[in-house]
Amino acid sequence: MSGKGPAPPEDGGRLPEHPVPRAEDMAVATRCTSCGSSHLTRDYERGELVCDECGLVLEDAMIDQGPEWRAFDAEQGEKRARTGAPSTLTIHDKGLSTEIGWKNRDPFGKSIPTRNRAQLYRLRKWQRRIRVSNATERNLAFALAELDRIASGMALPRNVRETAAMIYRKAVNKNLIRGRSIEGVVAASLYGSCRQCNVPRTLDEIASKSRIGRKEIGRTYRFMTRELRLRLLPTRPQDYIQRFCSELKLKGEIQSRANEILKEATERELTSGRGPTGVAAAAIYIASVQCAERRTQREVAEVAGVTEVTIRNRYKELTDKLKLRVML
Image (cartoon, rainbow, N blue to C red; front, side, top):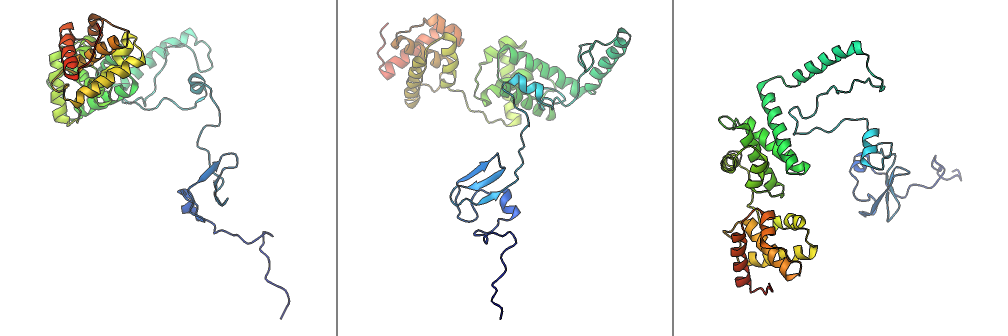
């Protein structure tokens, strides 16, 4: 019998203390395979996933999916990016087609010779025609341009425009626009999108920026919500407080006080059956007086889009039922 012991491992080191994790375990590693700890740290310099408790390396040679360049502002990021804009529902072809720019310059920035400009003009014309190939795309192109015009006039955020475009596309797919004006369906889609994204706007505000009356927008909106089964909650007075206070240039203290008044009024069911804009305007008026930064009823009424009589009626109800002390 030989006196030699077992041969050491080929790596010349110690035998492994922990089992080596399998590839399928490393792909979705959320806990350490040795000690079961969930405290894992990603070391981006070494490309490793390490357990903080026992030090086991769960994953190595990780691939960084981000860009290899850095950008310190949005403009610099756009210049260094090698991809185009993301797809969007606010363009009839979802922004996937190309467009020939109107600058008569080549990719190197040099001016295009005059003899070639006529050919470039024809290319632009045919490329513009090809982008809109059938009646459905022509309808979408006109409607989405109108949607963008109304949304720009109301300074609505990007997510509201995308949601409105999605609602309009659903209406087109279900053939709901037959017999109705495109502008009316667009305005109704935008109104429903505002409510869905918690950016409430009144029918009067949308009607003032569109070429359609308030009644037709409301009628089309009710029809679309019924056919498309849009589950939209009614707007609350609290949804208007921030925007009205911002337009009146009031402090955050007044906004907080107005929300407190509305919270108490909601608990006592004083807001049910009342227009949310009128109740919100009355709460802001009461809060401005209580916080010694008073705004007149006319100023609040102009911002809220209601009459002074409405504010006075809601003001009396809130002060009497909630027993608020207001020093006029």
